[in-house]
Length: 280
Image (cartoon, rainbow, N blue to C red; front, side, top):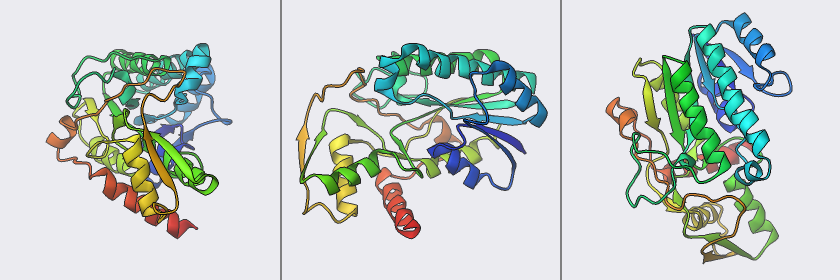
């Protein structure tokens, strides 16, 4: 299959290139390609003529989206429109990677795929609009929501916790933000199986189980052997620019019905640590 992957240098894009390496792949990322340049993007994809486009590219700096909303709308909305039009022109299927931040986090139970979104932030709103554009413009689409992504790359929550643990003796992490840490390679594994099925629609693909930022950091320190060397203090209501959902926990119902079941986040995190060890 000819597959184009936007955001190909990011954490999920990197994982997808590794997982889908037996296919014919085209990576779309800066500086070679800019999804906000309609003419250049559609021309590049027309030359490749993809059968599938996996759209992972986005402005994911949540607070940065609040500071620069026009930039967020340009990348997350117009960029997605451009990718969707390119999919339409090439009669390609499209996977749109979305987020748990399309919900407001007030539901006490897990969010089903068809619960009504109610984003709180510029980031969440732009991703929600991207979902709508994908559904409107691309007949064969998969809207895939994930949460708290980490994977190969220099910057993610896991590496931030490890860096701070080397710099400080005391770390503070919030207990009132709850979701599901999700390993990029597990998402890539799930997407490889999902796109083989013409079961188009909305999917939730986080790793199984939920935790707070505090619980996640505690498990990171435990796996790193630092739990006795660094004091981890729970806190609430960390002040940040963007409003974030407090309990945006996703239920994998639709993909599980197809036999695509995500493993617990603790198992995935342990494997990530093993992979980091092999890479060092």
